[in-house]
Image (cartoon, rainbow, N blue to C red; front, side, top):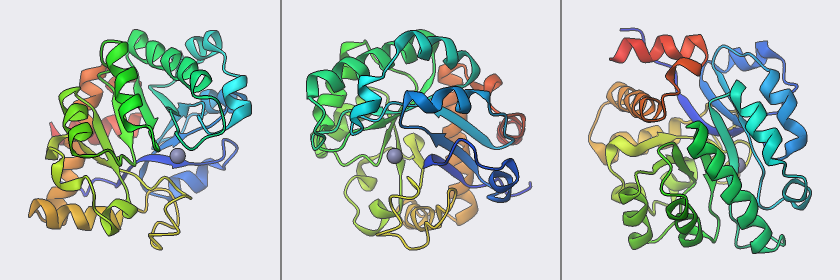
Length: 256
Ligand SMILES: [Zn+2]
């Protein structure tokens, strides 16, 4: 079996990046956006290994103010991913405004059955309450999750997936409490570079993969395969497999 490429389930990439540069990363990248002004460009892209997300970052006042549910519903037809969305307890944007936008994004994700990459800085419990309020989200991926032990159990019970990065590998908090079949990897490029020097581009998930190999007592190849199985499982749950880029679909076929 050919080695499957690394999976980066949360990275920030400019929507006008050259397709050749993305291909050169040799990784499956979930490229999230922060503002509605980026959505049209993200939705129009067709990249071999890159899945573009439509996001509205809770820390960006202009993004929250400019959130447009109708536009999200329209453009999400072109992509399996919503993100990054969420709540941020350290944001200056009023929490009621953040909640209005996050709730709407979750409702769209639920109704259209999409993957969602979720930000939860200093708002772990509040994020879970919103997921519960919409009756659960099969495609929820909690990105850079730092919830406490009981919140983490609650998130696992809600069916959430977790994308872990090099910062978690270097200062482990949640890794050992997560079921192996719910874990994905990410860089949150460029934001983890400060703690994980090797996360110098999207797809550079070696630090967290190595930590998972240790934690799970698996070989590097088996960790990669497990992560692909997890990707397959969340895509099956959301029925998004057929809207992934063809090359990613091809990878998923090799592990079934
Ligand atoms: Zn991010």
